[in-house]
Structures are given as C-alpha cells and as structure tokens.
Length: 173
Image (tube, rainbow, N blue to C red; front, side, top):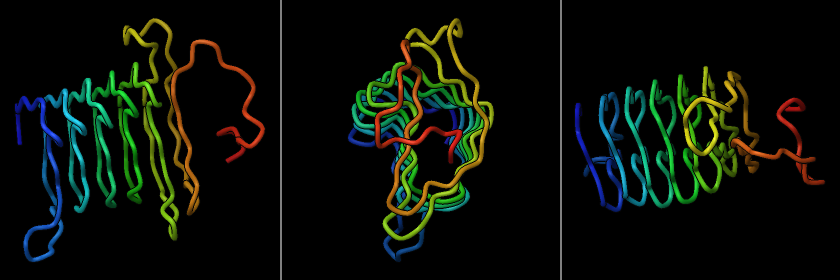
C-alpha cells in the first residue's frame, strides 16, 4: 500500500489472518495517512510487516496497535490520539525514528502478554511537546523487555514529577 489516505473508519488498516488462518505477513505500507478512525493501523496477525513514512493522526483509540511479532515501523508520525499513540504487545517490534506528540493517554505503551515477555527496540524516537514543533522534546533509543503481565508507558510531560509509589523508572528496567 503506497500513498493511501484513509479516514473515518473503525480501523484504517487491519492486518489479520486470511480465511485459511494464515497471518497477513510481509506487507509494506508506505507514505500514507490514517486519521479520524478508532485505530489508524492495527497489526493483529502478521509477521515481517514494514510501515515507512506514515502519519497516524486524530485516531480515537490508538494511532498504531501492534499485537503480532517481528514488525517494523520507520520514520512515521503518531499524534493527537485520544487514548494512546502506539500500543505494542507483539514481540520483536522495532520502532525507528518515530515522532510522537499530543497523544492523550500516552505516546507509547508496551505490554507484556499474560504468558510472554514483549521485546521492543526503540531507535531515535522523538517524544515531543503537544505542538509537535521540536522545541521541547526528548530523543530516546533503547531495547527492552516488558515482562509477562506488565506494562510501561512513555510520554512527554510538561512538568515531570516523582514516580508514583508503585512505578519503576526506565533506568531501573
């Protein structure tokens, strides 16, 4: 899929199993825009999908939801989502050069499944102020595991405070 403009659907793009139960794998989604949907792009079942130069904006649940393993997202912008920018539960996900801003429920949420860890690589991800103008931002790169049954969230904050009593900083992971 290249140069698509998708707006106002339940899911802008859904990658799922075919009627025979085979995952939707090895897809390329490039230079496209997904907005005003519940979820911009949802990878429910599929391996080795590549998303490059896409924009996910003003989606009500998530700009991007990745539930399957070994997918890559490169050079994309995820902004103005009502709940979360990106949610990842799929193992071995790579997020490279992503620009996040103004996602109400957090920019990036990584969740370990009930029985498995979720490994993620984040490379040069920009967590920007709500205006998305690169004036007040953080650039983060890391590789981490969300342990089975745990979640963590990354987001830009205008006034960072002490961690809640039951939270652990990224530095301690």
